[in-house]
Figure (tube, rainbow over the protein chains, first blue to last red):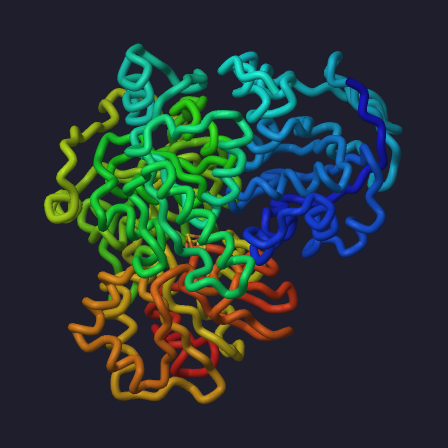
Length: 165
Length: 415
Ligand code: SF4
Protein backbone atom coordinates (compact mmCIF):
# COMPACT_ATOMS: atom_id res chain seq x y z
CA UNK A 1 0.00 0.00 0.00
CA UNK A 2 1.23 3.50 -0.85
CA UNK A 3 0.15 6.50 1.19
CA UNK A 4 0.99 9.95 -0.10
CA UNK A 5 0.00 13.06 1.78
CA UNK A 6 0.82 16.30 3.50
CA UNK A 7 2.54 16.28 6.87
CA UNK A 8 1.10 17.68 10.09
CA UNK A 9 3.98 17.68 12.52
CA UNK A 10 3.55 17.83 16.30
CA UNK A 11 5.76 17.29 19.33
CA UNK A 12 6.21 14.73 22.09
CA UNK A 13 3.47 13.27 24.31
CA UNK A 14 0.45 14.19 22.16
CA UNK A 15 -2.27 12.85 24.46
CA UNK A 16 -5.70 11.40 23.74
CA UNK A 17 -7.48 14.28 25.47
CA UNK A 18 -6.20 16.78 22.93
CA UNK A 19 -6.87 14.37 20.07
CA UNK A 20 -10.45 13.59 21.07
CA UNK A 21 -11.61 15.50 24.18
CA UNK A 22 -13.14 13.39 26.95
CA UNK A 23 -16.34 15.39 26.95
CA UNK A 24 -17.25 13.89 23.58
CA UNK A 25 -16.54 10.26 24.36
CA UNK A 26 -20.10 9.19 25.11
CA UNK A 27 -22.00 11.68 23.03
CA UNK A 28 -20.31 11.93 19.62
CA UNK A 29 -20.74 8.79 17.54
CA UNK A 30 -21.33 10.03 14.02
CA UNK A 31 -18.06 9.67 12.04
CA UNK A 32 -18.52 13.06 10.35
CA UNK A 33 -19.03 14.79 13.68
CA UNK A 34 -16.09 12.95 15.18
CA UNK A 35 -13.85 14.04 12.31
CA UNK A 36 -14.77 17.65 13.00
CA UNK A 37 -13.32 17.61 16.53
CA UNK A 38 -10.14 15.65 15.73
CA UNK A 39 -7.15 17.29 17.45
CA UNK A 40 -9.45 20.06 18.64
CA UNK A 41 -7.45 20.99 21.73
CA UNK A 42 -4.07 20.78 20.01
CA UNK A 43 -4.51 22.39 16.60
CA UNK A 44 -7.68 24.30 15.83
CA UNK A 45 -6.86 24.34 12.09
CA UNK A 46 -6.41 20.63 11.66
CA UNK A 47 -9.97 19.36 11.30
CA UNK A 48 -10.85 22.07 8.84
CA UNK A 49 -7.84 21.72 6.58
CA UNK A 50 -6.87 18.06 6.73
CA UNK A 51 -7.09 16.18 3.42
CA UNK A 52 -7.46 12.53 2.64
CA UNK A 53 -4.23 10.57 3.26
CA UNK A 54 -2.51 13.36 5.17
CA UNK A 55 0.11 12.09 7.57
CA UNK A 56 0.59 12.98 11.22
CA UNK A 57 4.09 13.10 12.68
CA UNK A 58 4.54 12.90 16.42
CA UNK A 59 7.54 12.78 18.74
CA UNK A 60 7.72 10.23 21.49
CA UNK A 61 4.79 8.67 23.40
CA UNK A 62 2.14 9.58 20.83
CA UNK A 63 -1.39 8.87 22.05
CA UNK A 64 -0.65 8.74 25.78
CA UNK A 65 -3.53 8.90 28.23
CA UNK A 66 -6.95 7.38 27.87
CA UNK A 67 -7.86 4.07 26.25
CA UNK A 68 -10.51 5.78 24.12
CA UNK A 69 -10.56 4.26 20.67
CA UNK A 70 -12.04 7.42 19.21
CA UNK A 71 -8.60 9.03 19.45
CA UNK A 72 -7.77 6.71 16.56
CA UNK A 73 -11.11 6.52 14.79
CA UNK A 74 -11.60 10.31 14.67
CA UNK A 75 -8.27 10.58 12.82
CA UNK A 76 -9.30 7.84 10.40
CA UNK A 77 -12.65 9.58 9.82
CA UNK A 78 -10.80 12.87 9.25
CA UNK A 79 -8.88 11.14 6.45
CA UNK A 80 -5.50 10.60 8.10
CA UNK A 81 -3.59 7.96 6.15
CA UNK A 82 -0.85 7.17 8.64
CA UNK A 83 1.01 8.30 11.75
CA UNK A 84 4.79 8.32 12.06
CA UNK A 85 6.21 8.70 15.52
CA UNK A 86 9.23 7.93 17.69
CA UNK A 87 7.10 5.84 20.04
CA UNK A 88 3.45 5.26 20.96
CA UNK A 89 1.52 4.77 24.14
CA UNK A 90 0.62 1.10 24.11
CA UNK A 91 -3.19 1.23 24.12
CA UNK A 92 -3.18 3.86 21.37
CA UNK A 93 -0.86 1.67 19.30
CA UNK A 94 -3.14 -1.34 19.78
CA UNK A 95 -6.13 0.77 18.82
CA UNK A 96 -4.34 1.77 15.59
CA UNK A 97 -3.81 -1.88 14.66
CA UNK A 98 -7.39 -2.67 15.63
CA UNK A 99 -8.68 0.14 13.48
CA UNK A 100 -6.40 -0.46 10.52
CA UNK A 101 -4.50 2.84 10.78
CA UNK A 102 -0.77 2.48 9.98
CA UNK A 103 1.22 3.71 13.00
CA UNK A 104 4.87 3.59 12.07
CA UNK A 105 7.90 3.74 14.32
CA UNK A 106 10.65 5.76 12.66
CA UNK A 107 12.66 8.13 14.83
CA UNK A 108 15.03 9.34 12.07
CA UNK A 109 12.13 10.07 9.77
CA UNK A 110 10.43 12.13 12.49
CA UNK A 111 13.56 14.27 12.80
CA UNK A 112 14.06 14.55 9.03
CA UNK A 113 10.54 15.33 7.87
CA UNK A 114 9.34 18.92 7.85
CA UNK A 115 5.90 20.19 8.69
CA UNK A 116 3.76 20.75 5.61
CA UNK A 117 5.82 18.76 3.11
CA UNK A 118 4.38 15.99 0.96
CA UNK A 119 5.77 12.55 1.74
CA UNK A 120 5.12 9.01 0.57
CA UNK A 121 4.95 5.81 2.60
CA UNK A 122 5.28 2.37 1.05
CA UNK A 123 4.00 -0.12 3.61
CA UNK A 124 5.18 -3.15 1.62
CA UNK A 125 8.83 -2.15 1.37
CA UNK A 126 8.77 -0.34 4.72
CA UNK A 127 10.05 2.93 3.28
CA UNK A 128 9.21 6.59 3.80
CA UNK A 129 10.29 9.02 1.06
CA UNK A 130 10.55 12.70 1.85
CA UNK A 131 12.65 15.74 0.98
CA UNK A 132 15.45 14.74 3.34
CA UNK A 133 15.74 11.26 1.85
CA UNK A 134 14.41 7.75 2.34
CA UNK A 135 13.84 6.25 5.78
CA UNK A 136 12.79 2.77 6.76
CA UNK A 137 10.49 1.47 9.45
CA UNK A 138 10.10 -2.03 10.96
CA UNK A 139 7.12 -4.22 10.01
CA UNK A 140 4.37 -5.15 12.50
CA UNK A 141 4.98 -8.31 14.54
CA UNK A 142 3.83 -11.39 12.59
CA UNK A 143 1.27 -12.27 15.26
CA UNK A 144 -0.76 -9.14 14.66
CA UNK A 145 -0.21 -8.34 11.01
CA UNK A 146 -3.30 -10.40 10.15
CA UNK A 147 -5.51 -8.06 12.17
CA UNK A 148 -4.16 -5.11 10.29
CA UNK A 149 -4.50 -6.78 6.91
CA UNK A 150 -8.10 -7.74 7.59
CA UNK A 151 -8.87 -4.04 8.08
CA UNK A 152 -9.03 -4.14 11.87
CA UNK A 153 -9.94 -6.34 14.80
CA UNK A 154 -13.68 -6.59 14.23
CA UNK A 155 -13.46 -7.81 10.60
CA UNK A 156 -10.53 -10.02 11.60
CA UNK A 157 -12.52 -11.68 14.38
CA UNK A 158 -15.42 -12.21 12.02
CA UNK A 159 -13.12 -14.02 9.65
CA UNK A 160 -11.62 -16.06 12.45
CA UNK A 161 -15.04 -17.17 13.63
CA UNK A 162 -16.07 -17.94 10.08
CA UNK A 163 -18.89 -15.42 10.13
CA UNK A 164 -19.89 -14.20 6.67
CA UNK A 165 -20.73 -10.54 6.22
CA UNK B 1 16.46 -18.55 34.72
CA UNK B 2 13.95 -16.92 37.06
CA UNK B 3 10.66 -15.49 35.91
CA UNK B 4 8.90 -12.20 36.57
CA UNK B 5 5.31 -12.02 37.80
CA UNK B 6 4.19 -11.06 34.27
CA UNK B 7 5.94 -14.05 32.71
CA UNK B 8 4.41 -16.34 35.33
CA UNK B 9 0.83 -15.12 35.11
CA UNK B 10 0.78 -14.94 31.32
CA UNK B 11 2.69 -18.24 31.01
CA UNK B 12 0.19 -19.99 33.25
CA UNK B 13 -2.58 -18.84 30.94
CA UNK B 14 -1.01 -20.52 27.93
CA UNK B 15 0.40 -23.49 29.84
CA UNK B 16 3.98 -22.94 28.80
CA UNK B 17 7.12 -21.05 29.60
CA UNK B 18 7.02 -17.56 28.18
CA UNK B 19 9.62 -14.83 28.21
CA UNK B 20 9.37 -11.07 27.89
CA UNK B 21 8.87 -9.99 24.29
CA UNK B 22 6.71 -12.96 23.31
CA UNK B 23 3.16 -12.41 22.08
CA UNK B 24 0.53 -14.73 23.57
CA UNK B 25 -3.20 -15.20 23.13
CA UNK B 26 -4.81 -15.45 26.54
CA UNK B 27 -8.15 -15.68 28.28
CA UNK B 28 -8.39 -12.98 30.94
CA UNK B 29 -10.02 -13.89 34.28
CA UNK B 30 -11.82 -10.58 34.68
CA UNK B 31 -12.81 -7.96 32.08
CA UNK B 32 -13.97 -4.54 33.27
CA UNK B 33 -15.79 -1.89 31.29
CA UNK B 34 -17.81 1.18 32.25
CA UNK B 35 -19.92 3.78 30.44
CA UNK B 36 -18.12 2.75 27.26
CA UNK B 37 -19.99 -0.59 27.34
CA UNK B 38 -22.71 0.78 25.04
CA UNK B 39 -20.17 1.36 22.30
CA UNK B 40 -18.51 -1.98 23.07
CA UNK B 41 -21.83 -3.80 22.79
CA UNK B 42 -22.38 -2.28 19.35
CA UNK B 43 -19.00 -3.53 18.17
CA UNK B 44 -19.78 -6.90 19.74
CA UNK B 45 -22.98 -7.26 17.72
CA UNK B 46 -21.14 -6.08 14.61
CA UNK B 47 -18.96 -9.18 14.85
CA UNK B 48 -22.07 -11.24 14.32
CA UNK B 49 -22.16 -13.14 17.64
CA UNK B 50 -25.37 -13.14 19.69
CA UNK B 51 -24.27 -14.42 23.07
CA UNK B 52 -21.48 -13.15 25.25
CA UNK B 53 -18.84 -15.88 25.50
CA UNK B 54 -18.62 -15.84 29.30
CA UNK B 55 -20.95 -13.37 31.05
CA UNK B 56 -19.36 -14.22 34.44
CA UNK B 57 -16.06 -12.73 33.35
CA UNK B 58 -17.42 -9.26 32.75
CA UNK B 59 -17.78 -6.58 35.37
CA UNK B 60 -19.61 -3.47 34.22
CA UNK B 61 -19.78 -0.33 36.32
CA UNK B 62 -21.43 2.98 35.46
CA UNK B 63 -19.38 5.90 36.76
CA UNK B 64 -18.07 8.22 34.07
CA UNK B 65 -21.09 10.46 33.80
CA UNK B 66 -23.49 9.50 36.58
CA UNK B 67 -26.28 10.48 36.93
CA UNK B 68 -26.59 11.22 33.21
CA UNK B 69 -25.83 14.86 32.39
CA UNK B 70 -28.12 14.99 29.36
CA UNK B 71 -30.27 12.80 27.15
CA UNK B 72 -27.31 11.42 25.20
CA UNK B 73 -25.59 10.18 28.32
CA UNK B 74 -28.96 8.86 29.53
CA UNK B 75 -29.40 6.89 26.32
CA UNK B 76 -25.89 5.53 26.70
CA UNK B 77 -26.73 4.22 30.19
CA UNK B 78 -30.04 2.85 29.01
CA UNK B 79 -28.36 0.90 26.20
CA UNK B 80 -25.97 -0.61 28.75
CA UNK B 81 -28.75 -1.65 31.13
CA UNK B 82 -30.57 -3.36 28.27
CA UNK B 83 -27.40 -5.07 27.14
CA UNK B 84 -26.49 -6.51 30.57
CA UNK B 85 -30.04 -7.76 31.06
CA UNK B 86 -30.15 -9.40 27.67
CA UNK B 87 -26.71 -10.95 28.06
CA UNK B 88 -27.29 -12.03 31.62
CA UNK B 89 -24.28 -10.13 32.93
CA UNK B 90 -24.74 -10.31 36.69
CA UNK B 91 -21.74 -8.25 37.74
CA UNK B 92 -23.37 -4.98 36.80
CA UNK B 93 -23.17 -1.96 39.09
CA UNK B 94 -25.46 0.92 38.28
CA UNK B 95 -24.92 4.58 39.09
CA UNK B 96 -25.25 4.34 42.86
CA UNK B 97 -21.97 2.49 43.46
CA UNK B 98 -19.02 4.70 42.56
CA UNK B 99 -15.86 4.75 40.46
CA UNK B 100 -15.13 1.51 38.60
CA UNK B 101 -11.58 1.16 39.93
CA UNK B 102 -12.87 1.23 43.49
CA UNK B 103 -16.13 -0.69 43.16
CA UNK B 104 -14.55 -3.64 41.35
CA UNK B 105 -12.37 -4.69 44.30
CA UNK B 106 -14.83 -3.60 46.99
CA UNK B 107 -17.17 -6.12 45.40
CA UNK B 108 -14.54 -8.83 45.43
CA UNK B 109 -13.75 -9.18 41.72
CA UNK B 110 -10.00 -8.63 42.05
CA UNK B 111 -7.57 -11.11 43.55
CA UNK B 112 -3.82 -11.80 43.52
CA UNK B 113 -2.47 -13.68 40.52
CA UNK B 114 -5.48 -12.82 38.34
CA UNK B 115 -5.17 -11.68 34.74
CA UNK B 116 -7.40 -8.64 34.43
CA UNK B 117 -8.11 -6.33 31.49
CA UNK B 118 -10.22 -3.20 31.47
CA UNK B 119 -11.31 -0.88 28.69
CA UNK B 120 -9.96 2.00 30.72
CA UNK B 121 -6.36 3.08 30.86
CA UNK B 122 -6.23 3.13 34.66
CA UNK B 123 -6.97 -0.59 34.80
CA UNK B 124 -3.33 -0.88 35.84
CA UNK B 125 -4.77 -0.12 39.30
CA UNK B 126 -5.49 -3.75 40.20
CA UNK B 127 -1.79 -4.50 40.28
CA UNK B 128 -2.10 -3.10 43.79
CA UNK B 129 -3.55 -6.52 44.68
CA UNK B 130 -0.85 -8.55 42.96
CA UNK B 131 -2.86 -9.07 39.77
CA UNK B 132 -1.49 -8.56 36.26
CA UNK B 133 -3.83 -5.92 34.96
CA UNK B 134 -3.77 -3.66 31.92
CA UNK B 135 -5.91 -1.32 29.87
CA UNK B 136 -7.25 -2.28 26.45
CA UNK B 137 -9.37 -0.68 23.72
CA UNK B 138 -13.10 -0.93 23.07
CA UNK B 139 -12.88 -3.25 20.06
CA UNK B 140 -10.68 -5.56 22.10
CA UNK B 141 -13.29 -5.72 24.84
CA UNK B 142 -15.93 -6.47 22.20
CA UNK B 143 -13.81 -9.37 20.97
CA UNK B 144 -13.38 -10.68 24.52
CA UNK B 145 -17.16 -10.66 24.72
CA UNK B 146 -17.29 -12.63 21.47
CA UNK B 147 -14.55 -15.18 22.00
CA UNK B 148 -13.06 -14.65 25.46
CA UNK B 149 -9.55 -13.97 24.22
CA UNK B 150 -7.01 -11.24 23.60
CA UNK B 151 -3.39 -11.08 22.43
CA UNK B 152 -0.88 -9.55 24.80
CA UNK B 153 2.84 -9.07 24.64
CA UNK B 154 4.70 -10.33 27.69
CA UNK B 155 6.33 -7.15 28.97
CA UNK B 156 9.82 -6.52 30.25
CA UNK B 157 9.81 -5.38 33.87
CA UNK B 158 11.24 -2.34 35.60
CA UNK B 159 11.71 -2.39 39.35
CA UNK B 160 10.89 0.66 41.45
CA UNK B 161 12.38 0.16 44.89
CA UNK B 162 11.19 2.58 47.55
CA UNK B 163 12.75 3.08 50.97
CA UNK B 164 12.50 5.56 53.83
CA UNK B 165 9.71 6.86 56.03
CA UNK B 166 7.37 9.55 54.71
CA UNK B 167 7.73 12.93 56.44
CA UNK B 168 4.52 13.94 58.19
CA UNK B 169 1.75 14.85 55.75
CA UNK B 170 3.57 13.47 52.69
CA UNK B 171 1.85 10.61 50.93
CA UNK B 172 2.12 8.11 48.11
CA UNK B 173 0.71 10.72 45.72
CA UNK B 174 3.75 12.91 46.32
CA UNK B 175 5.91 9.85 45.73
CA UNK B 176 4.11 9.00 42.50
CA UNK B 177 4.52 12.55 41.20
CA UNK B 178 8.20 12.39 42.09
CA UNK B 179 8.45 9.11 40.17
CA UNK B 180 6.76 10.72 37.14
CA UNK B 181 9.16 13.64 37.39
CA UNK B 182 12.14 11.31 37.21
CA UNK B 183 11.02 8.52 34.94
CA UNK B 184 8.91 10.80 32.66
CA UNK B 185 5.65 10.12 30.85
CA UNK B 186 7.21 7.60 28.47
CA UNK B 187 9.81 6.16 30.85
CA UNK B 188 8.04 2.83 31.32
CA UNK B 189 6.40 2.49 27.88
CA UNK B 190 5.19 -1.09 27.28
CA UNK B 191 6.83 -2.26 30.52
CA UNK B 192 5.50 -3.75 33.71
CA UNK B 193 6.57 -2.02 36.90
CA UNK B 194 7.21 -3.94 40.08
CA UNK B 195 6.89 -1.60 43.05
CA UNK B 196 8.81 -2.97 46.03
CA UNK B 197 10.90 -2.10 49.05
CA UNK B 198 10.20 -1.40 52.72
CA UNK B 199 8.13 1.74 52.10
CA UNK B 200 5.78 -0.17 49.79
CA UNK B 201 5.58 -3.05 52.28
CA UNK B 202 4.41 -0.66 54.98
CA UNK B 203 1.80 1.17 52.94
CA UNK B 204 -1.96 0.97 53.28
CA UNK B 205 -4.02 -0.53 50.46
CA UNK B 206 -5.28 2.90 49.40
CA UNK B 207 -1.78 4.37 49.27
CA UNK B 208 -0.46 1.46 47.24
CA UNK B 209 -3.40 1.82 44.91
CA UNK B 210 -2.28 5.35 43.94
CA UNK B 211 0.98 3.96 42.54
CA UNK B 212 -0.63 1.17 40.52
CA UNK B 213 -3.34 3.56 39.34
CA UNK B 214 -0.84 6.07 37.99
CA UNK B 215 1.65 3.55 36.61
CA UNK B 216 0.03 4.16 33.22
CA UNK B 217 0.97 7.85 33.49
CA UNK B 218 4.60 6.86 32.97
CA UNK B 219 3.61 4.60 30.11
CA UNK B 220 3.45 1.26 31.93
CA UNK B 221 1.37 -1.65 30.72
CA UNK B 222 0.97 -2.94 34.27
CA UNK B 223 2.12 -1.77 37.69
CA UNK B 224 1.97 -4.25 40.49
CA UNK B 225 3.17 -5.10 43.97
CA UNK B 226 3.13 -8.23 46.08
CA UNK B 227 0.26 -8.18 48.60
CA UNK B 228 1.37 -7.07 52.07
CA UNK B 229 -0.49 -7.82 55.31
CA UNK B 230 -2.85 -4.84 54.86
CA UNK B 231 -3.78 -6.12 51.40
CA UNK B 232 -4.36 -9.66 52.64
CA UNK B 233 -6.63 -8.30 55.40
CA UNK B 234 -8.55 -6.28 52.82
CA UNK B 235 -8.95 -9.28 50.52
CA UNK B 236 -10.19 -11.40 53.39
CA UNK B 237 -12.98 -8.92 53.97
CA UNK B 238 -13.89 -8.35 50.36
CA UNK B 239 -13.40 -11.40 48.21
CA UNK B 240 -14.38 -15.02 48.44
CA UNK B 241 -12.45 -16.00 45.34
CA UNK B 242 -9.62 -18.46 45.91
CA UNK B 243 -6.25 -17.14 44.88
CA UNK B 244 -2.57 -17.86 44.71
CA UNK B 245 -0.01 -15.16 45.34
CA UNK B 246 2.42 -15.00 42.46
CA UNK B 247 5.79 -13.33 42.88
CA UNK B 248 8.78 -12.70 40.65
CA UNK B 249 11.64 -15.13 41.26
CA UNK B 250 14.68 -13.66 43.02
CA UNK B 251 16.77 -14.31 39.89
CA UNK B 252 14.21 -12.93 37.42
CA UNK B 253 15.43 -10.47 34.83
CA UNK B 254 14.57 -6.83 35.41
CA UNK B 255 15.39 -4.35 32.74
CA UNK B 256 16.26 -1.61 35.17
CA UNK B 257 15.92 -0.71 38.85
CA UNK B 258 15.14 2.76 40.14
CA UNK B 259 15.52 3.57 43.82
CA UNK B 260 13.55 6.27 45.59
CA UNK B 261 13.99 7.44 49.15
CA UNK B 262 10.97 9.25 50.57
CA UNK B 263 12.63 10.43 53.80
CA UNK B 264 13.03 14.01 52.60
CA UNK B 265 10.20 14.15 50.08
CA UNK B 266 8.38 17.48 49.82
CA UNK B 267 4.80 18.06 48.69
CA UNK B 268 4.86 17.70 44.91
CA UNK B 269 2.58 19.04 42.18
CA UNK B 270 2.20 18.24 38.49
CA UNK B 271 1.85 21.55 36.69
CA UNK B 272 -0.25 22.09 33.56
CA UNK B 273 -0.48 20.33 31.12
CA UNK B 274 1.38 17.06 31.65
CA UNK B 275 1.62 14.60 34.52
CA UNK B 276 5.43 14.61 34.41
CA UNK B 277 5.72 18.40 34.60
CA UNK B 278 6.35 18.03 38.30
CA UNK B 279 7.99 20.31 40.83
CA UNK B 280 8.05 20.75 44.59
CA UNK B 281 5.12 22.86 45.64
CA UNK B 282 7.36 25.73 46.74
CA UNK B 283 8.03 26.56 43.08
CA UNK B 284 4.39 27.39 42.36
CA UNK B 285 3.33 28.67 45.78
CA UNK B 286 1.12 31.74 45.56
CA UNK B 287 -0.73 30.69 42.39
CA UNK B 288 -4.36 31.73 42.86
CA UNK B 289 -6.91 28.95 42.47
CA UNK B 290 -10.64 28.79 41.71
CA UNK B 291 -11.54 25.17 42.37
CA UNK B 292 -10.42 22.10 44.24
CA UNK B 293 -11.44 18.70 42.92
CA UNK B 294 -11.07 16.15 45.71
CA UNK B 295 -11.85 12.58 44.69
CA UNK B 296 -11.38 10.30 41.64
CA UNK B 297 -10.09 6.74 41.37
CA UNK B 298 -6.70 7.98 42.51
CA UNK B 299 -7.44 9.75 45.78
CA UNK B 300 -11.03 9.56 47.02
CA UNK B 301 -10.68 6.91 49.73
CA UNK B 302 -11.30 6.97 53.42
CA UNK B 303 -7.70 7.70 54.43
CA UNK B 304 -7.80 10.64 52.02
CA UNK B 305 -11.01 11.87 53.65
CA UNK B 306 -9.39 11.60 57.07
CA UNK B 307 -6.48 13.81 55.95
CA UNK B 308 -8.68 16.38 54.21
CA UNK B 309 -11.17 16.50 57.06
CA UNK B 310 -8.37 17.12 59.58
CA UNK B 311 -7.14 20.09 57.54
CA UNK B 312 -10.51 21.82 57.06
CA UNK B 313 -12.11 21.00 60.40
CA UNK B 314 -13.20 24.17 62.15
CA UNK B 315 -11.98 26.34 59.24
CA UNK B 316 -13.62 27.88 56.21
CA UNK B 317 -12.76 27.19 52.61
CA UNK B 318 -11.50 30.38 51.00
CA UNK B 319 -14.44 32.37 49.60
CA UNK B 320 -12.80 32.49 46.17
CA UNK B 321 -12.62 28.70 45.96
CA UNK B 322 -15.20 26.01 45.23
CA UNK B 323 -14.28 22.70 46.78
CA UNK B 324 -15.94 19.68 45.19
CA UNK B 325 -15.83 16.36 47.00
CA UNK B 326 -16.37 13.03 45.26
CA UNK B 327 -16.14 9.91 47.42
CA UNK B 328 -14.70 7.08 45.29
CA UNK B 329 -17.62 4.84 46.24
CA UNK B 330 -20.88 4.68 48.09
CA UNK B 331 -19.26 2.55 50.78
CA UNK B 332 -16.58 5.18 51.30
CA UNK B 333 -19.23 7.89 51.39
CA UNK B 334 -21.11 6.11 54.18
CA UNK B 335 -17.93 5.53 56.13
CA UNK B 336 -16.97 9.21 55.75
CA UNK B 337 -20.40 10.14 57.06
CA UNK B 338 -20.03 7.81 60.02
CA UNK B 339 -16.66 9.21 60.94
CA UNK B 340 -17.85 12.81 60.73
CA UNK B 341 -15.63 13.73 57.78
CA UNK B 342 -18.53 14.80 55.62
CA UNK B 343 -19.88 17.02 58.38
CA UNK B 344 -16.49 18.72 58.77
CA UNK B 345 -16.21 19.26 55.06
CA UNK B 346 -19.72 20.65 54.74
CA UNK B 347 -19.25 23.00 57.68
CA UNK B 348 -16.10 24.28 56.01
CA UNK B 349 -18.10 25.02 52.87
CA UNK B 350 -17.29 22.08 50.60
CA UNK B 351 -19.82 20.76 48.10
CA UNK B 352 -20.40 17.03 48.54
CA UNK B 353 -21.10 15.27 45.26
CA UNK B 354 -22.20 11.79 44.36
CA UNK B 355 -19.62 8.99 44.07
CA UNK B 356 -18.32 8.73 40.51
CA UNK B 357 -15.78 10.29 38.19
CA UNK B 358 -17.31 13.76 38.38
CA UNK B 359 -15.45 16.31 36.24
CA UNK B 360 -12.34 14.10 35.95
CA UNK B 361 -12.62 13.70 32.19
CA UNK B 362 -14.57 16.85 31.47
CA UNK B 363 -18.09 15.43 31.27
CA UNK B 364 -20.00 17.29 33.98
CA UNK B 365 -20.18 18.25 37.67
CA UNK B 366 -17.55 20.92 37.93
CA UNK B 367 -16.25 22.00 34.52
CA UNK B 368 -13.95 25.01 34.67
CA UNK B 369 -14.46 28.40 33.05
CA UNK B 370 -11.81 30.04 30.84
CA UNK B 371 -8.60 30.92 32.69
CA UNK B 372 -9.66 29.16 35.87
CA UNK B 373 -7.19 27.13 37.89
CA UNK B 374 -7.98 23.88 39.66
CA UNK B 375 -6.04 21.77 42.13
CA UNK B 376 -7.10 18.17 41.64
CA UNK B 377 -6.33 14.92 43.46
CA UNK B 378 -6.95 12.96 40.24
CA UNK B 379 -4.36 11.56 37.88
CA UNK B 380 -4.37 13.65 34.68
CA UNK B 381 -3.95 17.33 33.91
CA UNK B 382 -3.86 17.31 30.12
CA UNK B 383 -5.07 20.38 28.31
CA UNK B 384 -8.86 20.32 28.32
CA UNK B 385 -9.04 17.30 30.64
CA UNK B 386 -11.49 19.01 33.00
CA UNK B 387 -13.63 20.12 30.07
CA UNK B 388 -12.03 23.43 29.09
CA UNK B 389 -8.78 23.79 27.17
CA UNK B 390 -8.37 27.33 28.47
CA UNK B 391 -8.15 26.22 32.08
CA UNK B 392 -5.28 24.85 34.14
CA UNK B 393 -5.07 21.81 36.39
CA UNK B 394 -2.43 21.11 39.04
CA UNK B 395 -2.32 17.55 40.38
CA UNK B 396 -1.57 17.11 44.05
CA UNK B 397 -2.13 15.01 47.14
CA UNK B 398 -5.35 15.26 49.19
CA UNK B 399 -3.41 17.06 51.94
CA UNK B 400 -2.12 19.68 49.51
CA UNK B 401 -5.54 20.08 47.88
CA UNK B 402 -7.19 20.74 51.26
CA UNK B 403 -4.51 23.23 52.32
CA UNK B 404 -4.92 25.09 49.02
CA UNK B 405 -8.72 25.16 49.41
CA UNK B 406 -8.35 26.96 52.73
CA UNK B 407 -5.62 29.31 51.51
CA UNK B 408 -7.30 30.20 48.20
CA UNK B 409 -4.00 29.64 46.43
CA UNK B 410 -1.30 27.06 46.06
CA UNK B 411 0.42 27.06 49.37
CA UNK B 412 3.64 25.53 50.63
CA UNK B 413 1.97 24.19 53.75
CA UNK B 414 5.09 22.34 54.86
CA UNK B 415 6.91 25.61 55.60
S1 SF4 C 1 -11.97 9.00 38.14
FE1 SF4 C 1 -11.07 9.88 36.31
S2 SF4 C 1 -9.26 8.66 35.86
FE2 SF4 C 1 -10.54 7.51 37.31
S3 SF4 C 1 -11.82 6.17 36.04
FE3 SF4 C 1 -12.98 8.06 36.39
S4 SF4 C 1 -12.47 9.39 34.65
FE4 SF4 C 1 -10.94 7.77 34.70
